[in-house]
Length: 437
Image (spheres, one colour):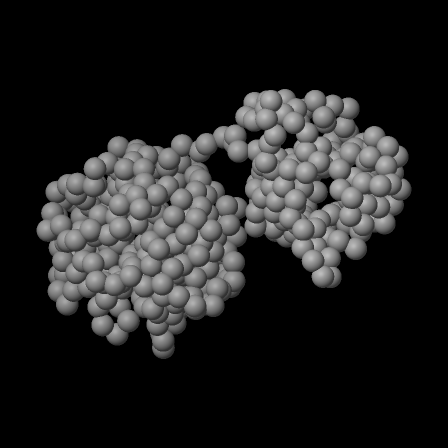
């Protein structure tokens, strides 16, 4: 048997901070043993309905699923307790790392400290079992463990191209099968527009966002490829942004222009498809019509674009959605390109406008390193879109050569771009694309 190390417990008073990790925890095995220990400890507990509020009062003998998808939760413990009283709390949606819980011990001690201290838990997947030990030490966590063994969503199998510009905005979409076959047009859902972006979220769904207007609207894509109606009014209205997945199940829109200035703001997308307000520009050069894709299975990268001139800079995105400063000088400076992931951890930027249309590509390693240009395979064009399909492959589609086109190019799971496939779906440019499962 070995001692488990759970999520950090911060007990904060007016003058000091104490960080407790293993004090007061039971000895148990890791993995399946941890789950069994939790189940044994929680035997006889009366489990309540899922709690989504920002405050709640706990009752001894109960178990609580705490869903902090939309907000943090302050939990008030009973004002009196008897030796052996127990309460269980569990992270219902694995969101405590974003919105944690705060425990108010309500006049009683918590692990030996009085209630002038604040007890916080902020790790995704935490299972917390507390038992009252008497007035000296009060409530003690007998289990404080982040459960890592969660179902793994398989890599996304299908894709979708959506919207675009063919002289005017369109609202059509085209599904991409798990074999890379592009289906015919599905028309008429959401506001017709071009100059938008799209990314995955939730592990198996997608989202289109923003567009020429400028607009501040998004459209969710279900895990069956069904596009929802417009959601309006979140984030600065803009066109020419890029978007990618990060953190394994969340997304980020970044950059673009509002028609007067180049922007470096970003908007995070939760694993439930909720778009957050603007993150103020602190890193990254403002620009439009860059590309973005996931790499390393849980991180992202924005690359290239136009800031008044063509640039070849990139910005990495951490698995917490933090955008890093500019990295400059790899690959041909260009705008109106696209990007997607491939090979379960790598990415590819492709096509664009360097002053004339180009078909060059640049591979991205699973550590976010961008390689030098690979000469064009496939027709040079600008304003294409790209997404993953078949779990580990990619596809570039549509764009502008000397006019709008309906060309697609498959990308193998080793990053090799295939020759043109033509004639499926309405020709258009400056559209978006993402994968779904």
